[in-house]
Image (cartoon, rainbow, N blue to C red):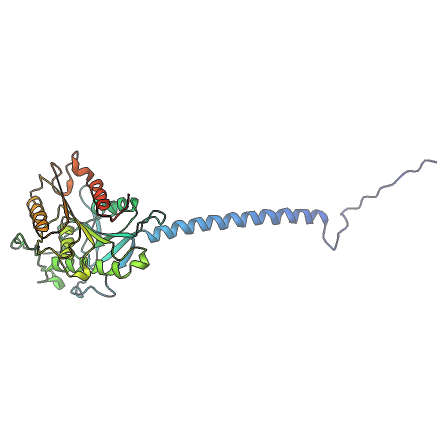
Length: 330
């Protein structure tokens, strides 16, 4: 007798514990897919957060004073950012002096800090090739850089003509007296010099926070920034840098401090503004038993704007000098 087996198909399928088996499989797949998407989003957001955090950390502003800078409480104008005729960024009308912190990568950090004072005749700050570009170069050898935006003579659209004033004697810094509103009768160069000294004090006091050694705080300045740097080098011991570099900016020459920090000088022979004062500073510093190194490049002019000579590589010479003085290791 042939028996025929009858198989019954029931649609929709019977539920197990009230859940459709097909739906259960689909739910599992969906859940796994959802988990993957969530993990991917977390990783993406974490990456973005790291990038954003690095951007905020690099170039972060650190005010030099808790409130208004002493002496400029009546300066009621706003700082301006603009470019020069070559398209390079400049800052003008600085009222609130700050440091812009460019930290070195922690993996290569040497525990050394360098405050960088750009030039610009106390009317502008050349923020690229005398500021941020230098900071990045210092970062490459493990140095934390702090670009100093010091106070400047007001030069806004309605600024009156400021008299040039009497030229400073060889052993003195220049003097520029303001004439505009709250800046009237103030020695703006002296205020900028105070900002330089305060910058050294601040970085030294917060050395542990920045991850640098309190006895490895240096300062370098270009042109007018060199004048600011000299004010710290020849100023009170508490605000004196542990080493200094003055690039085509020598001016103030006083008694060599004791102990004397190592000093690096660089200038072009065809720089009529800075060559003689740089030579005088080197001679005086050496006479005072201060360790100093001088580089006079055949060409370059003021600002090392004439390219093609040894002045193009002055940062290489600076790095060698830092190693020679055991500020950096090889």
